[in-house]
Length: 305
Ligand code: ZN
Image 1 (spheres, helix red, strand yellow):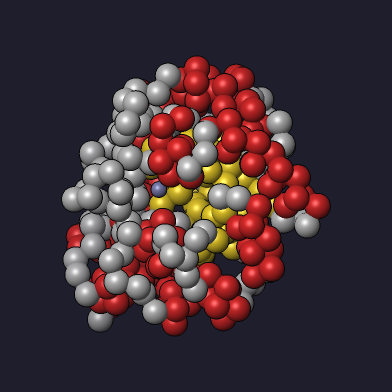
Image 2 (cartoon, protein in one colour; image 1 turned 135 degrees about the horizontal axis):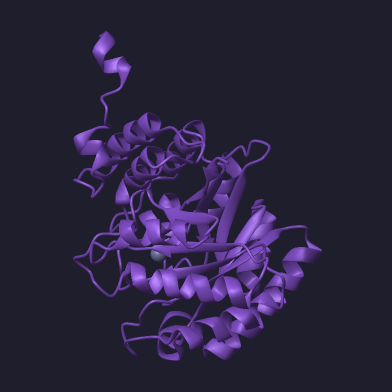
């Protein structure tokens, strides 16, 4: 049996959010079009949050209006409240993602409400999304560690996962928001989550803050995750570790999966080209490694020239 895993490209949102200069909407459109041509079927295109707090995402509606969504493609928008959901629906997203943070302190810092209040907001958002015919998924963030509270017990993460599962989300994502997790944690959490939430699709979101992101991704695949988030060129940051790198890099992940016989439907060479293009757009080196080293074995295209 062929093994496969779905990739959710988060570069346009999680990746670009931390960029200090605002990326022009036209460049975001071009990036997303390149990602689609590379074979990605699911892209986190933007977030519908307060534009004063996140100026990089202030063009959410404008961006969506300039994008054409091919059949079978999911454009997901991050929302944190009902107002965000209404904006995402009006803008034409066919999927939304909401975030509930496993640590109460972090949830209050990030969303200015308690974890309990975010769970209640999610249940309401999921109901409204379903009524509007929009797919809804939810992330349990800081699932592998919190910058304020330290270790987050697996039991706490599972308890929140069970609560958010009541709304029958398309999928639950366990997010290592600060890039603190290690593979043994991933194996333990996913194994327990599969037992506690039979039949629920599980996705993972890793940051490479401490260089464990790609190992965590492999552990997640082995432990039964059906989808992984990753960011083109490894762009993105971590607000709690300003000097650190961002999300795990899509094309680096792709190389590992390809060579391990795990299918994604995404072209490695197209992703490498897109990462190099993005690096030019941003005007500074970005963390991806395949874009520097190239694929292996070297592809025939080079040999024929
Ligand atoms: Zn993230």
